[in-house]
Length: 240
Image 1 (cartoon, rainbow, N blue to C red):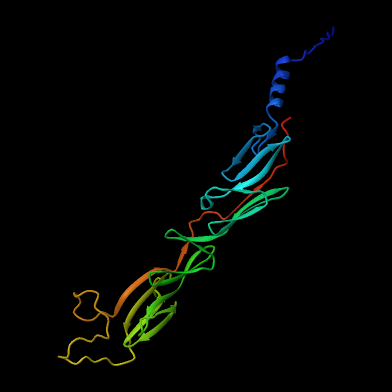
Image 2: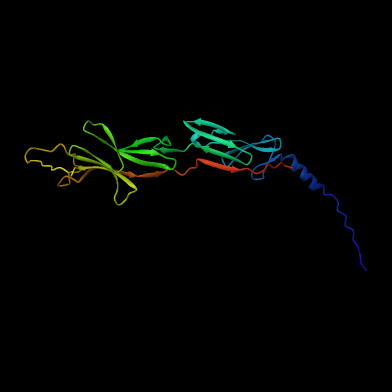
C-alpha cells in the first residue's frame, strides 16, 4: 500500500518582518556590500569618498594624503595645494586619485626636475628619487663653480675632483689633490706654501694625498609612498 502525505508550508511571519527591516535600513550598499542608508557619507581605505543618494552609492571625491592636509578633492576635480597638484578622476568603471610626484629633502619638497644643493653636491629631483649631478668648488675669485660627475678642474696648484668611488660607484665623492702635472718645490727656510690647503690633521708627518673629502649616495630613492591610486568600481547595488 502506498501512502501519500500532503505537506502544507505556512508563511513565516518572522522572516518577512526581518526582510522588511533590512529593506527599510539598506538603501545602498558600499563597495564591500555593507548596508548604508539614504544620505550616508563615508570614506573607504582613507581615500574614496562616497555618498548614498537615491539608492545609489556614488563616489563624490578623493581624500588627499597628508601632503594636502587630507583635503577632499571633488570628483573630476584638480586642485593645487602647497604648490603641488592633486586630482580625482571618476568614470563609470573606476576612480583614480593622483598627486604630483615630488622629492622631500630635509623638510623641503621639490618638484620633479628641480635642482637643489646639499652641502657641496648638486642633486636633481626625479619621480623615482634624487640623483647627484655634480659638485661645487670655489675658483680663484671664490666663485662657486659646478663640476659634473666625472669632471675635475684646476685652481692654482690644486685639482678639484667630482667622481664616483672606484670600488663603490654607487657613491659620489668630492675631494682636492695637488695637481700631478707640475713640479712643486718649497725651498727650506722660507716658511709655508700657502697655495696648498691646510692639513686636516697634524698627526700626518707629510701632506696628505687628498684634502676635503666628502661623499654621498649617487641615488637616493623616494620614501615609497604612492602617487597614484585606482579603485575599480562595482555596479551600484541597491539595497533591496
